[in-house]
Image (cartoon, rainbow, N blue to C red; front, side, top):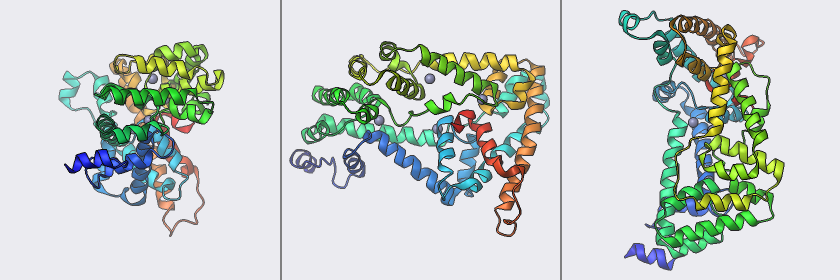
Amino acid sequence: MERRRVIQGDERWFPTPADIIAYNLMEAMRQPPCPICGLMRRAEERFLFSLFWENVNSPHVRKRLRDSLGFCATHTRAVRQAVNHPWVGPLGIAILYRDFAQTVLEGVSRPAPLYARLFARENHRVLRLLSPTKPCWLCEQSEERERTYLGALVAGLDASPALRERYGVSHGLCLAHAERTIHTARSGEARRVIATAAARQAQRDNSDAIANLLLCQCGAADITASTRLEMQCPGCHAEAMAEQEFLQAITPEDLARIWLRLCPTHQGQATLWTLHRHGSEFAYDLVKQTLAASESEPYDCPMCDHAHNAAWAALETAGDEARERACLPHARLALETSTPPEARTWTAAIAARMGPLVRDLGELIRKHDYRFSDEPLGKEKDSWLRALVFFGGERVNG
Ligand SMILES: [Zn+2]
Ligand SMILES: [Zn+2]
Ligand SMILES: [Zn+2]
Ligand SMILES: [Zn+2]
């Protein structure tokens, strides 16, 4: 009874009184960007704030982050960008990443147990030592939040004419979220209002509106990272080159055709690139084609494929140099197909690199203590950044 009254009579649309999810969505719909993207981004900022402000030394938090050996590439970049905030700074990063480096060092320094020497392939054993046992924590939380908000929005749009009306005059969802919403909405009216809002945004003669529509803020804005080509890790370097090559060849028509198959990061990259190069005229066709697709499909990103193959070949060619300079994700890629003797060289090389990193991070932490803070910084000065790059790949540095 209550629910019905609120939905029909009140333009604020609240499924239950004081529904915080509905309240957040309504607030986020007031201004760009996409309400789901905006809510996710704000929650990520809050997470990083509380992590670096008060949780770096919490055993439970440390354990969870150690299980995933830091963050995925996208969220390592978020940490990298957050370092300029007074509440992050290098100290918190040094404390966390010394822990991860220590974990890796202990893993690779331990002699292989007998059963492993007898029954496991050496490269698989090393690969397991260097692999996270859990996914990126921030990804996990963001996906959960995204599901909750998308679910609530779809339920609201299905049930409430007041919300549909309100949505119709807002700037709407980004295309990636509009596409997912359309494929989960049950009522034709809800699907119509989402498609109409997206088409209207696509026809606006306003580059900000177009960018807000086409770029899911969750995976966007990686283009600068891939134009930075002088990288240490042969895998990262080859990936960046391969992405550039892919982008050079892409036309707006191609983009509309493959848009749904691209992973969020490459969707962002390819869309930004095409916007820079061709202006926004293609937006309307892209939106129409994307929203007309009969169902959401899992990513099968051709750009990832291309980059992945290039990285793998570059690591093969680089040999010993790769072992001295590869980031951890690319070390894992090389280990997938390496021979047992090669795997042993990888173990030795990584142990040799982790030792000094752990020491430098320790020095950096020590010099943050007020008793030693007047000692000048030496080579440990940038150890926090070297650690971020080792665990998250070089693209964090874009
Ligand atoms: Zn979005
Ligand atoms: Zn992540
Ligand atoms: Zn790399
Ligand atoms: Zn991709």
